[in-house]
Amino acid sequence: MRSDTAALRYNRVQLALGIVAIAAATVLILLGVLNRSLQADVAAGQARITNAQAAANVNNTLIRLLAKAAAEKNDDKIRALLSQNGISFREATPGASDPAAGGVTASPAAIK
Image (tube, rainbow, N blue to C red):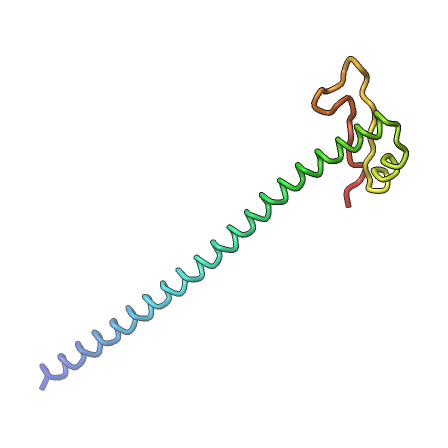
């Protein structure tokens, strides 16, 4: 009888360990799925940041071109437009002008 009781106990321990192993595997699978979801969210955020940087580069180029046109043509409407959007600029001195900026230095006064 003792051997039957010991065998029954051994089978119960094996069953319990099997259940624990299945539960652990299930948890690992769920964590893997959650990890992939988080990785997708991070990748989407990185794509938004990259797109925002590209848009900022376009915005800066556009601001410089508008400031250059306002300075060269003495256009008060473009100056007013830039000023309304928080952009101030000054014409650089001829000896210190940056060829890329076209002799104009533009900077945002306050970006909200």
